[in-house]
Image 1 (cartoon, rainbow, N blue to C red):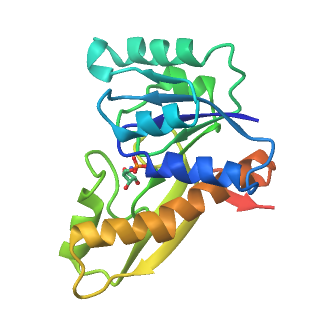
Image 2: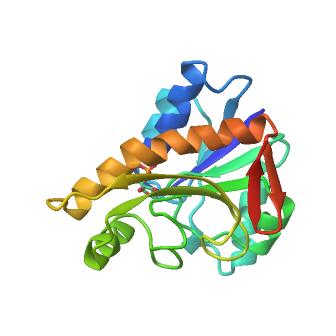
Length: 206
Ligand code: GRF
């Protein structure tokens, strides 16, 4: 199975996938391509270190979402991609790409959706919002991507306790390490083993 990983940042989720392929947890799986929305991020170094082809496709270089989608689709074409994984990817995808890869795009979000998600809620912001609201647990969600921000069928979620002394940065690191980096490879494995059934806006793991 070939996967394409879309990144915009440090690439720790990309690294988690690489590590789970290397340790045999993800079998018959190859990261065929990494696409970054930025050219100054460490995720690109991680791809290079692991001999993974990497392209930079910046949203700001395209006048319209449709042209951006077209560029992404062109980069993905003839690579027999079975699954697109958004791993810290911060650009919005348009209907052309989403329809071409319907129910074959998953995203990891650093909160327990439907809390602290939606447009503009990315990176450190969900953690700041969780601390501001005073919730006692937070975590991460892996979901299918549809045409609305963070609204596709949820595949997996994992929670952690929030400590009274937590700062947004400390909480983000705990959620990444104890949640994101665990459930993203798990969701990929479930998908590649065809164990995820989508019914309406829900999933059932078989
Ligand atoms: C992570 O919190 C991820 O959930 C969010 O972007 C942050 C950076 O991810 N979408 P990564 O280290 O680039 O994988």
